[in-house]
Length: 441
Ligand code: SAJ
Image (cartoon, rainbow, N blue to C red; front, side):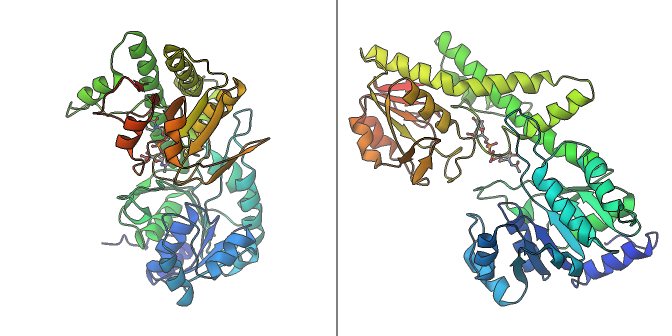
């Protein structure tokens, strides 16, 4: 049952009619791992979609019917482009002809761990140039609470147009989980909060046309904070088990057995697992958007800062454990051949952003080790002053120590256990296997 539009401003009611009639022309700014799946989802729902990106290469690939995102089949892009329901451009003037525009651009951290809002500001400035009555704008990039109200709203209302009356402005956190075989853009519940109730209703109507579940909330700041809670929850709990792993090693307790047994508790517990550190473009980054904003409110986000230190120290800890393992074999780290198994930030994907493997490799080389790696998803890694290419995993048998950093399913762990003289397992990938050559985090 679709909510009535009787109590809405006429512009909102008219826009919802276009959305419900699928005549609204949908736009997506930022055609990455969030924007392209969203554009395809609305194309598949019957809308005409225009993608806008500053990368001519991305634009050209989409217009050629090619997907460059692992989770988006090229066949779907090709079919939508051929049907005239998906096209892409670098020209923001296309916004003149749009009824809706989603912003899905990066929100990285600066070296100082302060938010880098430059991508959002640049996109918003372009949208402000072409803002027109009847346009719905939704920010999806993960950001600090207050971004939509304090940064975007003034930029858009400079035009004289009023949010909630003339145009509609919402925040909706992206929840795309790259490589997740079960949850995709369509079946992940979508939280959306607007500047005004009319904005929220328009935003909810919009997502309701293409996604299975919409979760309206009372404001943009609530929607912004929802995402930060979700990912800060993960980051802190990963920090907890990483600290537990260090404790358990010191007390000669098998932390993996502890967690597996704790995970049998059918309520009130959620397992997280130790690892070599925290990678990806979400979990290591998003919580620092919250701690930055809370500092401005005069509150230090101590949990986030502490978990950041614990997680940040894990690559050093892996190097220390490698050193200790070699020492047990009367070998120095310096001059030893270390073979890293897996460099992506998590299993079965090709993304190395913030991957702890990069830190481990750098630290090992700093200490004079001869480091190589194998990763079926990552053919080469470029560091500041050198590049490493992935080598055949069989070569691990010749290393003084192999280190499992990313537990890709495609590795042959039986062969590795049988052939490697020494193997440090930071992911419990060798669970159930035993041998004097196996050392666990
Ligand atoms: N990690 C651990 N131990 C764990 C879980 C993760 O060390 O128990 C490490 C991973 O190896 C990786 C990093 O943390 O290096 C982040 O892993 P992640 O599983 O959180 O994966 P991400 O970064 O792809 O996070 C995404 C997030 N999705 C969105 O932000 C939309 C996150 O909210 C999801 O919960 C997560 O995927 C997921 O569940 O896979």
